[in-house]
Length: 124
Image 1 (cartoon, helix red, strand yellow):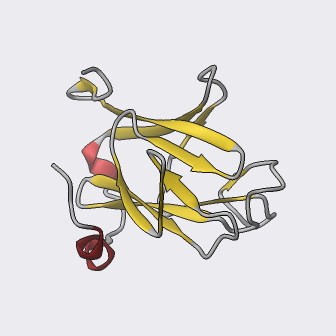
Image 2: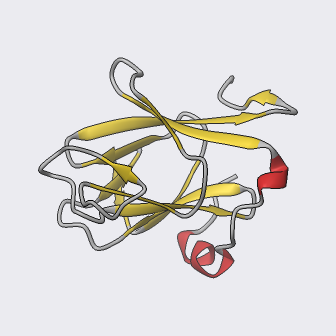
């Protein structure tokens, strides 16, 4: 199911750890390193004050944040110079599902979602 982007912004909520879901990003093309996202919101950038720090000159100091909203992940671009791209489309807000590709600067990541109850949601 695809949610219209305009409906995502008001639905942003704090992450509920009781859902027992693990989120991570695996760098492409090789799948490593794996970046765990243990808490939300998770700010990604190259600055010293971010949750996930990436060393890429094309990534802004505070590039984007990943938020847990209604049981799903949402990426929000924080006004980055080079944009936040999901599956090849530049976006300000976008939902992230299993196997979606998130591109920031010159780096691309595949989204992994794993539920302790249901097993991996990345299997198709």
